Length: 184
Image (tube, rainbow, N blue to C red; front, side, top):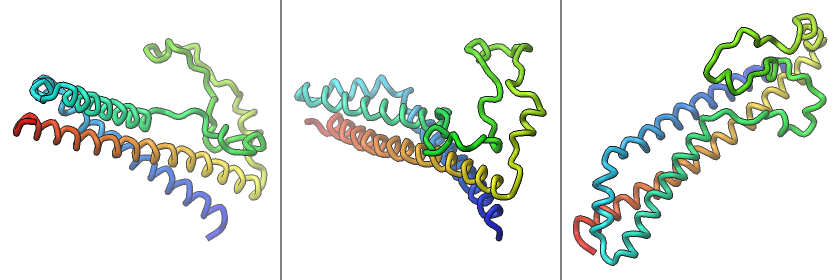
């Protein structure tokens, strides 16, 4: 296996891991949103807990951990900022593998498909930026791999936080159920 083949395999592995993390975030988001239909019974259970301060505390903990978990998982699915800015010597590379920033979109493009959108570079300029030898190819592939590693690590961290807060949310829900069912 050549160094270039190794770099390409590393990129493929990172991309597959990122996709798997996105699927996990999405699945857990669905699980977090499912109980919303029973929010009324949750409030009823919280109101039945005595002393009231305990019910308020459990309610705040329940909805607070749910919200933090939800936000963490949504952020895990959302696009990140430019990962090249997190690589120490990013200015030494062209980023030709991914070619981010090739088009300039505005807020209206979220709803409209405007015909005035055009690439910011000509094809000849893009060709001129391509790596010219094996060493430059390896450098660009490694640069791309490092950007993907950053994305992967951010997504792993957000997924861990989301799962951790979801665990506390479920445990708090169990305590609320037990208090409501068997008294305080």
